[in-house]
Every structure is written in structure tokens, then in C-alpha cells.
Amino acid sequence: MTERKAVLLVGWHPDVVDYRKWSGLTREKLLAGLEGDRAKLEALGYDAELGLIKSSESAADSLKALLAAKPRDCVLIGAGVRTIPEYLHLFEALVNTFHESAPKARLCFNSGPFDSVDAVQRWVKPS
Image (cartoon, rainbow, N blue to C red; front, side, top):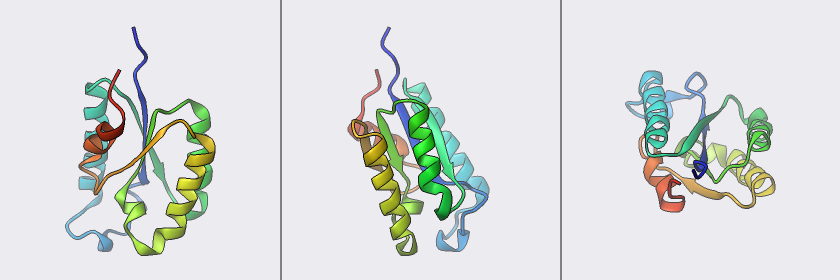
């Protein structure tokens, strides 16, 4: 049996999101979207894990620890980090941490908390 492809979904923890930046999004909707996409990936044959960050200051270290814990085939950095201009330096730090810690993994991006499955499948097929 082939090992399942390991996927890490990186984004803001629902408890620290500034929901004013995302019209109509609530903690409950975000959590449901994140958990829903993780569960869909699992059902499709991936080994999917949420890597939820709680602050810009600790995010790169958190990602580094998650990448050191086990090899990853794909890392997704969510739109909540990537598309908000004030998080540009955080996004750069995460991309550089990814590049240094998991150079063989694929990197992908979603457009929001509900299309992570499509983003992962663009780059990594399940085993």
C-alpha cells in the first residue's frame, strides 16, 4: 500500500481573525470551511492537517515546527494570509520558511477557506 500524500493547510486560527476584513465570514463559517476541506482531503486519500497560526510573530516558527514534524508533499498558504496587504511580510516569511524547510514539497494557494481541495489537487494527486 502506498502512503497517503501529506498536506498541510496553513492559515489563521479562527480565534484571531479580524472578520471585518472578510465580509460575511464568521468564526463558525471559517472553522466549518477549514475542517470541511481537511475532511474532504482525507476522504480523497490525503493525510491532511490544519496548521493554524495565531500571530504574525510566531507564524514562521510554528510552520517550521510543523514541517519538521513530518515530511509534507504539499503546503497550502491560505488567502487570509496571502491577500491582505498588511500581511505581506508574514506571507514572505511563510514562503521562505516553506522553501527552507520543505524544498521538495509543492506549494499552493486557495482563494478562500472553501476551495483548498481544488488548490491541493492542482499540484498533488492522492496516492
